[in-house]
Length: 151
Image (cartoon, rainbow, N blue to C red; front, side):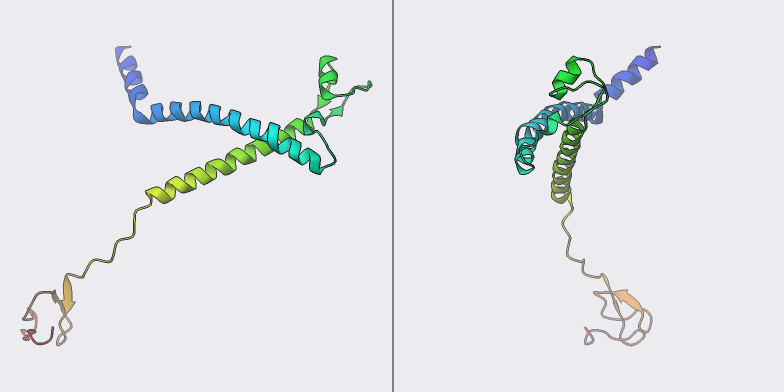
């Protein structure tokens, strides 16, 4: 049993687990910002574009009674299909996904290794026998040609 707790403690102390916990906490806070953006800015703006339509109040009433709003139907316990809230949540998801895409894309660009200039070759080809020889050689080891003038 002691080995189990030791392994568990090592698992928790790894950087990845701590990074994941921080990411979840920041993601929860970020979710509130995006939810506010969707609910308080985008949805009212879209509502104005579509004849002052309030997305949060779009629902299908599955009962036989009429209700003036979704909240009234929910207070009465009427079964409803809340497709306006679904639209709001889909927009929320798309915005979060797009922002995360932009964030990951930016981070990947920052971490991408810079392209290095190609290294100068360490060998050259003998112009007489076409063998590979060291770049600094002045005489070919294969055909013994003098390469001091050949460059």
